[in-house]
Length: 145
Image (cartoon, rainbow, N blue to C red; front, side, top):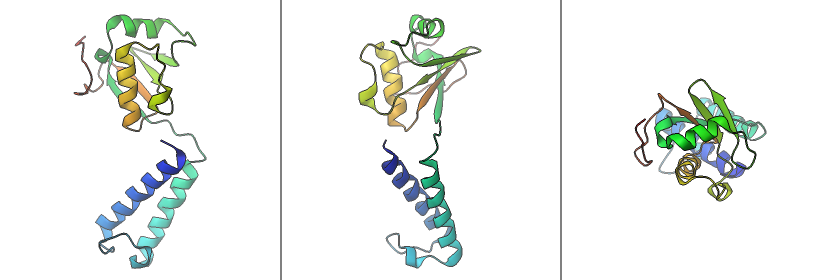
């Protein structure tokens, strides 16, 4: 997701939240329909969204190690090949950088890793943390280990 799309999405979410909380909007979001407090909150949300576009924020999803076959997980844990993927090990898991969009997924990745990375990108995450206690995602294959 590009920075402008991300900002627009966050602004829409902020305005939607204000709509729910203040019920100050008519049928469509309208800045003029906001009272002073709601307008100040909306402007603060917009300023925060714009500021975060200048800062790198890592969004990681924690999913089960079992979404990868054991041999792929072990290869990730034991290999820091630049050609394979960017990985950080920790305890019983690891973190994988997803890339910017689905087109950036390396075609040489094993299929299950591609599926996990693609799913994470589509959900808006920049990293996937594979963890033994991570969530099992119904859309992804689960090897159950």
